[in-house]
Image (tube, rainbow, N blue to C red; front, side, top):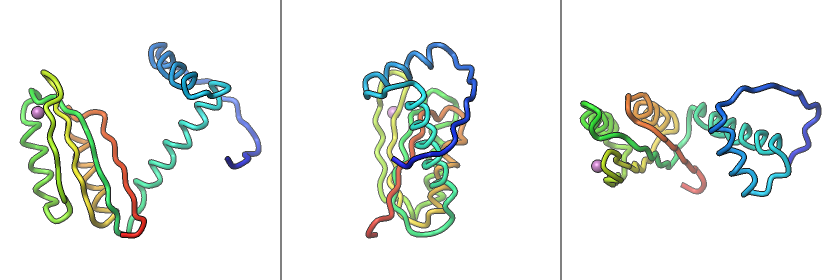
Length: 140
Ligand code: NI
């Protein structure tokens, strides 16, 4: 890991259940301190965000998300978004996860900027949660 010069101490207020979950994860992963876990989390967040800011180049990516199928109109909205990006979507899978939740995986190939826009269109729909975007551009 890259050596970072100059540490700044910050104070953060968090809901205790969020912190408890985080502590449990970092203990399980062998972090020596909470600070180290938080630093790594922030790095991962920055990498993800910086990818989202990429503006060009061919990428292949997946977007996964959960949604409550009883949310009025949401299923139709998701279908409409996917139809707007016909040429980019290579496949999608829908899994009825439990009584309320559906899980979808959409595999996309195309311009990085368009993949970003498609992901944002899905993320912005009310009732869509736990959105994850993964991408690669090696050797395609
Ligand atoms: Ni379903």
